[in-house]
Image 1 (cartoon, protein in one colour):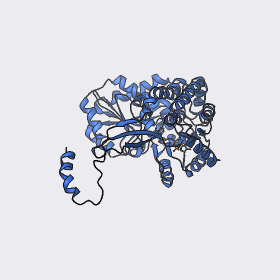
Image 2 (cartoon, rainbow, N blue to C red):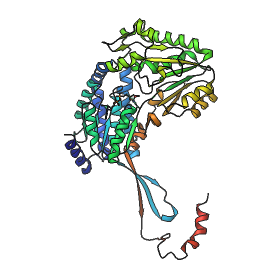
Image 3 (tube, helix red, strand yellow):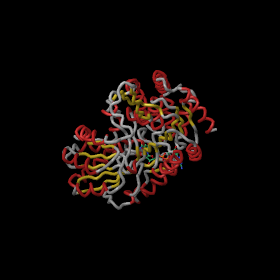
Image 4 (spheres, rainbow, N blue to C red):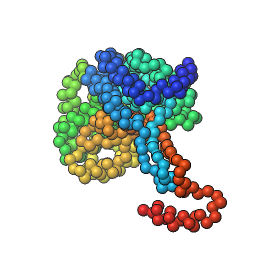
Length: 458
Ligand code: NAD
């Protein structure tokens, strides 16, 4: 079934049906219309899968995707147009251009934490670039996956966009096939399998992965604002956000105040009983609940603030954490926030830079010198200074990881380029033949060497 679906997509692609730019725009417009009309259903599915609060779901999934479509529609004509560039002296007179060509049939494998957005955003770029698309949403967010399948089949010709439902086996079955591009979002462990499957067919890949995103808090800050911005980025979607601050390093001079303000802020956000708050999400499944439960400090485990049947873990602030603590080993990906004190920024930067490169890095400081030091010392996919998570909403910025947090980038123009092959085109005429160096070479080199030296030395 997978094979025949792919064959059908290949035929459609070969027919050129996906290439016309006006057609691509019409399909994206239709996608936006359906998403707008179905927004309550989307919010309902996200509530069912992850207990997502309505506004969180609307902003981070529905609006996020509509914003991507609107941004793309405004610019697609320009992006898709061949770009004229200058030729070089050897070829004079020649016309050179770069054409963005769709790859063909692309595969998008999605994760469960923002199950709608993380399939739709790459899909928008892939369709905008003129590709046929196969999606496989995460089986761990089944309500959203089912709704997406319905939505995509309502919007697209099934031979242009096809959705496969299922888990690991289906994903592996898909990866047996030869795609022209694979876009994967998820864990590093699975990414290695995806990449080796792609290696068999030499298929290019983008890997959007995670990691432990650090957050450094200097003492030169507006503490109230900083705490709110960190708490919001950490506890939205119950901490299951790839760019959530994983842990916070706070200067010792404000450590106590930071911790108590963080606890108070969490209390203000979700009330004395976060389990009753309509504004707090749920852990995706029991497996992840158990993993996170193991990470909770003894006291929190004993005292409650969790409910396995309801997949609920209260927002948990853990103070006085050290670099060798259990919480510092793996990406937490849940509502547990370790707070580490520091006295010397230099040693914090060394500690972080020795660890795998994170997807995002956060620094809070009014000192430009501190901001620059963080920027220069820590490699990461993206950076946001004096806020968390918000950098991913700016469509002029690329989104993607580096090292262990992934490879490749997307969103806006970067997404269009990811799903396009930049094809070099040179056109020449027959009138001139200035640099046609052909055998027998004789003393040609001696004659042209002075010119080459003059011409090509800066
Ligand atoms: P996952 O790797 O378990 O699953 C992602 C997709 O891969 C799913 O569709 C799943 O069915 C498929 N899959 C699972 N095992 C597979 C296998 N053996 N072979 C082929 N496909 C397989 O990831 P997840 O748990 O859904 O996502 C959580 C992780 O993703 C976190 O680490 C998080 O940081 C990261 N993440 C990254 C981004 C980003 O944009 N960089 C966004 C969200 C999540």
